[in-house]
Structure formats: C-alpha cells, structure tokens
Image (cartoon, rainbow over all chains, first blue to last red; front, top):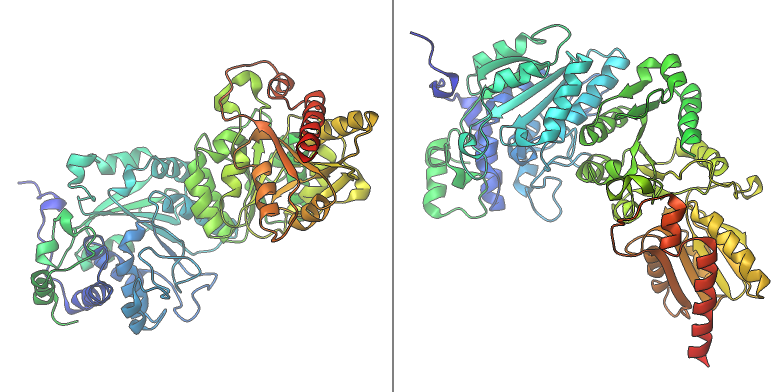
Amino acid sequence: MGQAPLSDRISPPLDERSLHLRRLVAGAMVRAGRGHLGPAMSLIEILRVLYDDVMRVRPGEPGWAERDRCILSKGHGCLALYAILADHGFFPVETLDSFCRHDSILGGHPEYGMVPGVEASTGSLGHGLSIGLGVALALRMRKSAARVFVVMGDGEINEGSVWEAALSAGKHGLDNLVAIVDYNHFQSYGPTAVVQDLEPLADKWRAFGFEPLEVDGHDVAALRDGFGRLPLKAGRPSVLICHTVKGKGVPPAENNADWHHKNKLKDAELEAVRAALGDF
Amino acid sequence: MRATCLNMVHALAKRDPRVLYIGSDPGAGTLNAMKAEFPERFFIEGISEANVIGMAAGLAMEGYVPYVNTIATFLTRRCYDQIAIDLCLHKLPVRLAANGGGVVYAPLGPTHQAIEDIAIMRALPDMTVVAVSDAEEMKRFMDQSLDWPGPIYIRFGKGNDPVVSRPENGFSIGKAILMREPGDVLIVSTGVMTSRALAAAEALDGDGIGCGVLHMHTVKPLDAEALVRLAREVRLVVTVEEHTRIGGLGSAVLEALSDVPGLRMPTVARLGIPDVFSHKYGSQDDLLRLYGLDAGSIAGTVRATLAAERGAVL
C-alpha cells in the first residue's frame, strides 16, 4: 500500500492557535464586509510556522537588516499576513478592525512602507519570486545569513514571470531563497486541475533547479519539520509545496470557489463562520 | 550614446559599490571590462524582462542601484506591470537604460521601434524620464543619475549622434536647457531631436524668423517653469519628438501650459510620429524624413504654421 497523496490526506485538527488566527482573519473580514477569505484561510499554518518557529524577525524593528524576509506574493491572502503580523506585535491587533477602510494602513492587498512587516507591495500576481530573487542575491553579496521566503498561490504560478524567476534562481544556486506554494488546488474560477493543471508540480520545480518538498500545509508539525530541513539541498533554492485546503477551517468555504472573495456575507454564512471558529 | 552610458555604469561602479549592471541578453562583449573588474556586480539574466525588473527591485530594496539594460521596446512594453508595481510603487532607484529609443531600429521594423515609450513611462507615478541629446550630455546626466530618488527611464539615441550639448550649460535632471533664445517661435525638443531643432532654427534665422530651442532632456518631471516663462514671449511653440504625438513631449507641454490659469496660450504645434506603426524600413533618418522630423521639414512646418497663425490673427 502506497501512502495516500498529500492532497487527499486528512490533516490533524486545528489547535487553539490556528483557530485564534482564523478568528482574527474572520473578524477583520466581517467588520470590513469584504475580503479574500478562502485564500487567507489556506495560508494560516504556513505563516504561523514561519513567524512562530522559523523566521528571525524583530517586530519592534521591522527593518532590522539581518531579519529573514517573507514576501507574500499572493497578496490577496493578506488577511492571514495581517493577522500573524498583528499577533506578533508588528502593529496593534485592533488595527485589523480597520481593514479596507478609507484611512487604514491595511488595504485589500498589502503595501510596502504602509504596513510594518510587509516586505513588498503585492496584488498583481507573479512578482514576488523575482523580487525575492533580487533580495536573496543582495543578501548573499553582503554575506548575510538572512533568508528570503516567497509565498505564492497555485493559481499565481500560471504566470510566466514565476518561471522566469525560477530559471534565474536555479542558475544562481540561491540556497537562501525559499519558494512556498500554497497549493490549495483552487483558483478564482475553479479547480487548478481544470483551469490550468500544474502537475507534475514538484518535477517542474526540480527541472528549474529547485529542491522540492511536498508537505501537508495544515500540519504544523510537518511544516516545522520541513522548514527545519532548509536548505533542502546546499547550493540550490528550495521550494515547499504545501498542500492546503482553500477556506480551511470554515466548512462552507472549504474547496468552494465562491468564497475566493466575498464582499457580502449573508446571515447564514456569518453564522457558519462563527459556528466553525467561535466568536470573534 | 549607448556605449557612453554603459561605460559610465562601469565608471560609477568604480566609484560606488551600490552600482550594478543587469542585462537581459545584450550583444556579445557588452561591458566586458566591468564584467572583468566587478564580476559580482555584473548580471546577464536572459530574455526575461519581467523577471529582470523584479530582481532589480529586490536588489534596490537592499540598497543597490541597478542599471538595467536592453532594447527599449522590450524594456517598456514587455514588463510594464513590473515597472509600475515593483519600481514605481516602491519608489526604487532602478535605472532603465533603453537601447534604441524612437526609430533607431528602423530597419528592424515595428517590434523594435520604441514610439510610445515616453508616453507609457511618464504616465507612471514617481517615474523620471530622460532623453539626452548626445554622448557628452549622457556623461553629465549619468553623473547625476546615481543619487536621484526613484526609478529613471533613460532613452538612448542611435550612437554617434552629433554633439550639440555644451559643457557650459551643465546638466540638472528636471531643468531644461535653453540652447537658443526665442523670437516669435520656440521649439521644445527632447533627445536627439534637439540637433534637428537647432538646424531648423538656424535655417529659419536665414528667413528672418527668430526661433529658440529649449532642450527638454527631462520629459518628466517637466521643467514647466522654464517652459511657461518662455512660452509667454512667443507666438508659436513647436514641440519636436521622435515619438508618437500621443502622450509624449508635446502632450506634456500642452498639459503644462494649460495648467497655468490666465496664460495667454500661444499656438502649439506638435511634431512627432503619427498614430501608426511604420511599415517602412531603411534608416532612422529615412523614417524621420517620412514623418517630417528632419531639420528641413521642421523648418517648413514652422514657416507654414507661423504664416497660418498670423493669417488667423489678422
């Protein structure tokens, strides 16, 4: 009996910390009346493990030169990034309540220079890996031990620019660069397998010079173990292909393209979110 | 002008450890001397302009000043989103060194002719757009390019362009240079068209038409102060650019003049490339003649426009 594919695995139940971060996301979204809920919920454990266990950052000194950098290339997942940054004290948690308001620092896509801890303005897909490549080259030139993590969506890697960047990163052998694919198997229109099939995904990255690792993107222990093995191979950039569930933790949103972006929540939908996560 | 700019990148790299060169797939041997002296600051990244711009942005975020170099059409059209978001939105000091502005690549056809680069670059917030007149002016500009905040689009001429700039005029980004005092007419020109404008002005002088030339080497930020001051003194302003008449220097001049409340508006004639892709080849000068942008045609247009303007006033 072979192991079931990661995409079919049943992840461990969400613990209180994962639920807490999801409540921050849901609260911000509900108070704003809009937001990309599905793409944020699939990201929670990836960002949680990065910020809780992996990255060296100083929330009080977001520009610290030796920090590890995380570029959220799938900028539409920003609610998850805002939640973890606020939770770590980059800015007050109450700021989340201002999401998408006219004078908020927290827009529907994250902006560099506006939000402490945000490393690049993203929202137009396919930019982050090239930026991360440049940052990683700069860090290597000045012999810094800092690393660069670039979080991409699976739909995002339809963009040709991602593969241009992958070619370059492979050529430069940047083992301080870590690509992360939030492989929730859905993009805006529907399943990635239908819109633009990515398989065999690990082979594609390998062919471009990356060392790939596939993990369950909601299994905190598995993520810790995967990130703990970086670089996956000396002299090569790494890619963690994180199998996730779009909308994870909110049953009506799970694997449901209708929840990619919401600008109105019906009462019943709101109740379903509260039933899943508790009060927020 | 191209060779001068690239050699200046090398010279600046000697002076300042922040300076990098990034080419996509330039001609063999490009900047060999810099490659030999500073291999770690010399990058050839392949035909991948979108990636190159993003990579340059990342390097600039970490304090470097990258000079990115390829053919103008590919450096503008192919990676416009990356230029807008990665460079302009982040206000990063990346320099776009664009080979073959305008119709330099006449024999290679419309894919290689950068006829709208100024328009699309200047529409982006925080972008600076510079088109110097010749190699000597390129040197003076490059000295200043190092510490200018935000991205700069640098439009190159063909090479071996006649030197019309003068050292005594100096160079400041954003400050136009009055090359010739106006009479009834002021020509405002940019890039290598300034040499044609000066020749046209000389010819008009023989006809008793006083024609000044304002060299607008920086199309953005436009030196509106100099433009408006001179425009008040003349009957006719003629803009001359190797670029579509839509959105370039002529548009910038009209916008700046119309922004001044109560200004007595002179007649403004905009000379440039019509709203077409060229299907003719030959040389840069062949195409400039086709579009009425050689010195003789410019002078002829000035005479005709001035006569029409006088007739209309009378």
